[in-house]
Image 1: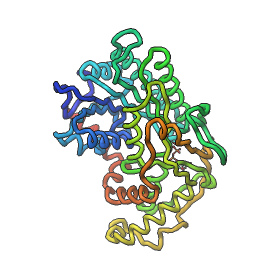
Image 2: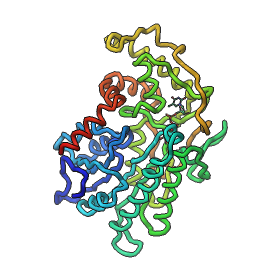
Image 3: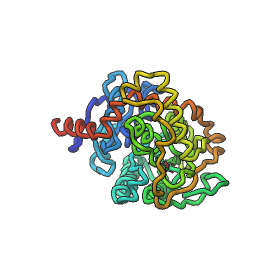
Image 4: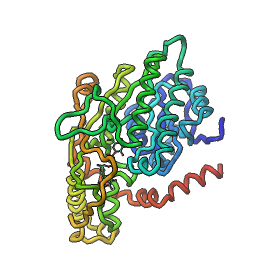
Length: 383
Ligand SMILES: Cc1cn([C@H]2C[C@H](O)[C@@H](COP(=O)(O)OP(=O)(O)O[C@H]3O[C@H](CO)[C@@H](O)[C@H](O)[C@H]3O)O2)c(=O)[nH]c1=O
């Protein structure tokens, strides 16, 4: 086995069941997806490959890794590592690749785009190339059930004005280095389908929220800042609009698209829940206050006073360069062809999310302090 380490190896039994290679499975959406799949299909196998960057965290799937009843194996490694990815194909009968591995934060991409190209573009190209070689059983013929699903973003379409929606036919017009890297990857996925017949799927989701999201993104950042007694920075006038999708709904959509999606196709996945950023932040302030009123043991724990949690915390700051005004997704294709629609209402999802962060404050502290990174890196360097 190449340099990288494998723990809790449960793959390789004789029973023929579907096996997923989930890349980036220790990150926010990836870890939620692994939980969803293991719960829904206890007999299926999942191999999680993750580099464990600042945003990928083994703690997110630790419960599943330590549960011998669940068929999850974890490999620490980079999707750019050719030998490692080839080895995973050679030693497992992989049915689905679901690629969540990505640098995902727009602001970081504005600071420095290099790692975005390495992971989001070259990494995807490496996965595609190996899948093409290892899955191929004859010229342009692949086993019926294998599929390569690239998790992409609605940001590849650029920005909408007040009217209209993104459809799968909308032109690609990325505006940030991050979305340009995701759009490039989508083009490579398309090219591998057209050129080699690789059975690919692309999903483009709107803004996700829910448990295990790294607190650099709007919703967990605001929750974390309130709990730490900090101001709430809003870019520009706060009137930019995003379409918010609860992460579990997103996982359900990906599962259904893997099972029912047509190779070569793209599916947009939205929450049908457009909100301005200001509205999101005000909602968090109100809901967090409601929760704290009921669970007042948390007030002591975080040394907070209810009266101090109010809209005065909002701090309008300089706008993000190239800030997209509005994202919104036309729900038709995924609804009519796959039969998927979001099920979790925003009011419900945001309360569940805030409560999760309150109940898992140690996770938040460890992830922001870098303690998790140090802990897991030490664990690997000792092995
Ligand atoms: C972090 C932060 C963000 N914002 C604004 C910028 C955006 O209009 C909105 C959401 O920002 P972010 O949470 O960074 O997410 P956004 O740029 O929309 O991109 C997200 O959603 C995309 C899907 O639409 C994903 O592909 C990206 O990986 C994900 O990061 O809130 C603020 O006003 N203040 C902040 O501190």
